[in-house]
Image (cartoon, rainbow, N blue to C red):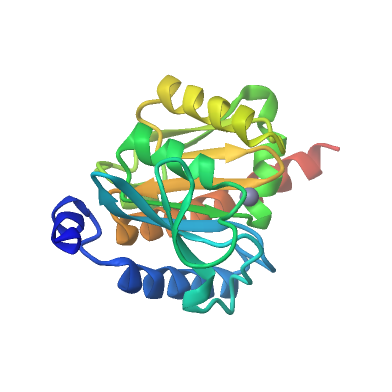
Length: 222
Ligand SMILES: [Zn+2]
């Protein structure tokens, strides 16, 4: 049976309906914290690997008030296999991360701090975060002394070009847990939805800490 195949290859250990419920819950949570206001951002979780099937938010879905109808299923080409409507415009980026990182879930937020920092550090092509206890919340990190390099890529409305830039960045920074899109937002992922959600929380916390410090310092210098 198809459901059994999906279960075996699914790092989330859940079917489309269950994952849809979890994505709705994540959207409500992120919206409540101001990380996904309006219809901004998008969320996905892998339902199956062979063939690749991804539960993903529909284009224009209100992130604080999604219903099961707002969660579609797409195949590895981004074609809708379940549900009505158009998947998020950034579905291609989700598929790129899933393939390049073998991710079970990809989450994309538009927070104030990621928007500001991705612009402030764009010239350096990355934001380096080190010395904070909260870094240990990132998968595989066991010490506050860890140096997390978050690459920053230029934003674009050309999803084909953006997807190629994202893939190049993921290859160039194999240890990175996230990528920032300039003046746009955060992409992070995990082996499953729970881990990806944790990464969003940890990174958004660190962005606020680094951001408050950075902008307090630069304000004083001016
Ligand atoms: Zn976006």
